[in-house]
Length: 299
Ligand SMILES: [Fe+2]
Image (cartoon, rainbow, N blue to C red; front, side):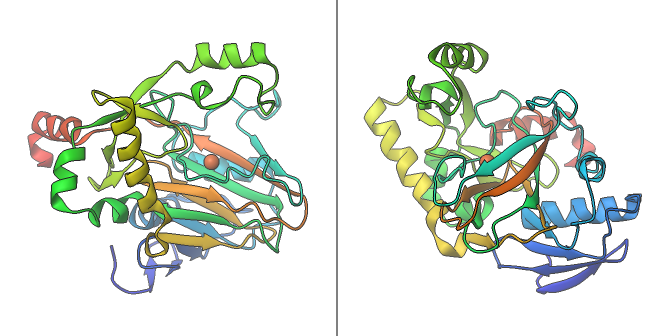
């Protein structure tokens, strides 16, 4: 990672980091113009270096340009409610309500066997006072752990499920029959407690209390205590960056190495749209080492 707070990237991009652990505002892009390969590569480099990047002044673009931006990071996932724009997940919240704000530390879709690699959230009608979003670096959180704890958690996996964390009578996803469908669609799976970024090789803490149900091979109480201990790392301000929304702002984050939290103090109703990009299975340290043995020229 570059040591300077501000630096230039090929493609005419300027990077201004928001915090030492993660986050950067990238300027030099007008999404109304086609995104050439130099700019796309610059965005990927900035994202992989800083975990979450922000663009400003893109209030003149629409769905097509949002999609074009997402495609710079891979293949957009089509699982949204609008058949005309299935790539879009609406993210809306009412003033003063916790509903829809995602106000707990999490990584999008970690309960899926192949979680999204990157999320791209566009402020359509954002709240400009309150309703910030915070991100925390799993890389910094892992690096800050004691060596003994790292050795303990490196090989561990946690169990995770979308439906299992949601009470059956909770209405956000609809009716009880809807819950049964969710449980069938997302049965409990396991994910590595510590993951490795497939491009950079960075190690990151991935377990989070929002979707984790327990630690594989540990009794429930012991596993939950460890998850709570590790999740607490994301609450340290030195591992975080915070974004105040404005119209035309876009946040892009790497789901594999950062967690995020929607602060539920929006003073007005707000509306954002998210596109997520298809990822692969999360790599444990052992998966990463095995992969590198199979490709010795990259070692
Ligand atoms: Fe989220």
